[in-house]
Image 1: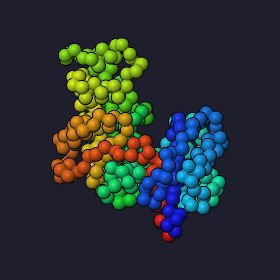
Image 2: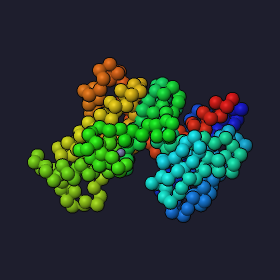
Image 3: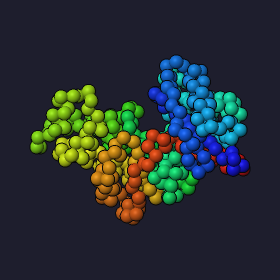
Image 4: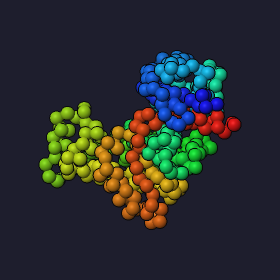
Length: 331
Ligand SMILES: [Zn+2]
């Protein structure tokens, strides 16, 4: 069996998909193979691209399919995890009701696991990343939106309707007065803490800034189209007070989201991943300070707050981990 303790992990995103063979110890055997998703070309072509990415990943590892025990596939929601269906994801338009798990299982004749992409990333960090030494963890991924995943005792909390761990839509402000979220509601964490909304808040703060001269404001005035969350975090690290205010508010909002989930599942560790974690230790300690101030006293004393360690590889590594879990459960 040991010779076949290899798993293909495939992480499908709206722009690209990537795959690699990962060992039973969580080690990728090559750099991931990356192909364009091109969702606009339709779902039949999309399924074929997935199969081709998997084939190339096995070739890149110098293996054949006889060396592969199972395949794991992660996609963005909306989805039906139990049924193995991509439903109607905003990132994969115009795909609808795509039987992704069964298609891939049939194409390769291998057991195939299917999972939400943020859940898979959380499982990757839990298996061999920042949370590999703990028994329970929650991941917040900060990007265009705020994704989430919850792992308790090696189990991914998928929920009955495939919406477990949708932490971007934990409500941190009143639903009538809070900021507008992409989901249609108001007051969601995502409406405050995503990279997109960090930029929006920065623009608003700039308009009414009465503090000292700000290089961030000068930069914004000169090059608005390159104004990103990364730029704001960079200026904050350099001591720009306006940028520091925006980042401090961001830490506050993320901490409120973290406190809500701590009161729900009381995890051993909370992990933050995505572009903004490049801000480093001072950002992490700010989040920690707000968690201490607003969380329930007992769990906040010992909860660990960490940054993700697998970067953008977490998705395919976690998908491979899901494939490994599937086979282990069947044995
Ligand atoms: Zn929302």
